[in-house]
Length: 178
Image 1 (cartoon, rainbow, N blue to C red):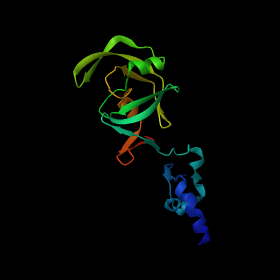
Image 2: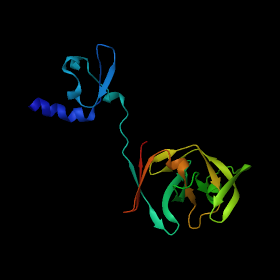
Image 3: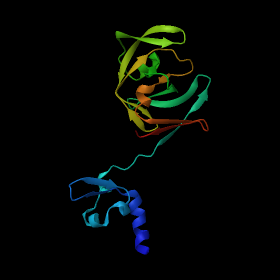
Image 4: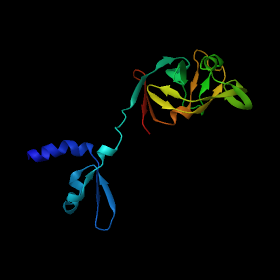
């Protein structure tokens, strides 16, 4: 019985691989699922896997415009963006684009549907967007001053790189590895 207790801990955290007589490769996270005749061929794969990244818990600030989240652009410029799962692209104000040293382009122009109608805006390449230690990029941000009380919108071009949960208590944004 003590031997079973010693194996129970590592078995839960390990991935095992074995090859049957037909040459088929099998994987399991439970050593007890390996047929006894193949247990002498089992190899632990856990030492080859990168450590699992825990989900990032990022505080949000509730405002009349929506939830604000702190963002870092290209590793240096901070911005407060409205979390917007309905926006396909991230939107940055002209002021933040200037602070980040982004080159704003207007060719081709970007047509943006806003609450006030369709407007034409510029765009800029952002090498890296970071939220709570999670990064995505490069991405093409729309440059437009359309968000009162915030530096822009954090859209699905960033959020789509993660499994996203929004918890009203706190409020908190959870970014899970995909």
